[in-house]
Image 1 (cartoon, rainbow, N blue to C red):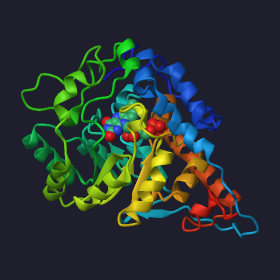
Image 2 (image 1 turned 135 degrees about the vertical axis):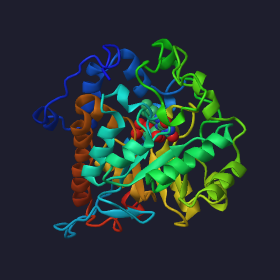
Image 3 (image 1 turned 90 degrees about the vertical axis):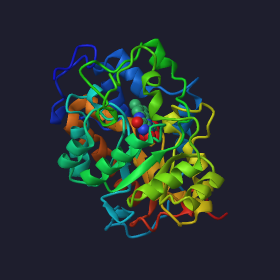
Length: 376
Ligand SMILES: Cc1cc2nc3c(=O)[nH]c(=O)nc-3n(C[C@H](O)[C@H](O)[C@H](O)COP(=O)(O)O)c2cc1C
């Protein structure tokens, strides 16, 4: 398959030396901006409405201070942790994001390899441009599958079985999409999935195409979600599979508790990276309430605006088991495919290790709430 000029303006990956001269996730975003077509960059970078939630996600992490501890031996540090019995080299997962082939010709395979090399799990979007079987075959770290519940239960049951057989370790059921958010940047740039790509996991026999032209992602993928989604659907999914189901897109403590009662084995505090309800709270604000209410019954993950090692430490101090990153992986892919995504994860891993040392935290267990709110 050849990339067309409109998908990706510059085809040559940055060299490893060039990648090693990028030090921040924002450097990668700037490179991706230069290299991707206007349409692809707008799709990846954009949020819903006035993009208030999108920008507040980052601002809320930035607003928190770390009241570091001193005079603690941090010469030996371990960022390693576990999530649902999975080993994590550090508390990070790749969030589910759609259409990786628009960022790089190797698409989700490049992401899976980068995650594997770094020892972090990848959550595969159900809107991936590579089949779940191919991704699992290339993976060296645990693969989770993000799923939407739509109207076609027969199709979903088959998809669940495929995901189980492919070797995935868990599901993330996305629940913040009763309808798609209004994403103006997609509409203004006439977003469409390039004809040479397809949303392979969602191809139904008899359906002509999952492509959609100039109408934002929602129009022809309408059947994959449903505004009638409710708690009994979560119970249905939990009853259908033996794999653990995490629920992604929660912003309230009461919803988190209901999800646990309905069988969820994990909560992902998320507002879809500001792409759904504009005006939703930033995830750094939602997380502590949810973590407190859930009280370690199940792990709580968080995503949205995580761009620094310090953001990861803040999330853990607020009660998260781990964080997920969405756009940073896409910027890495755009810059250098597998090596670019690897470098993005490396930047965050190194930064997190440094922040652990500077905060007086040699272990994950030592990252506690008082780092953000010390006693007076
Ligand atoms: C381009 C793009 C595509 C996404 N696709 C999906 C998806 O298919 N399913 C899903 O549950 N979330 C999706 N998300 C949301 C991410 O899983 C995640 O919640 C969000 O990106 C986290 O915010 P961040 O990008 O600031 O790290 C997508 C986000 C982006 C930016």
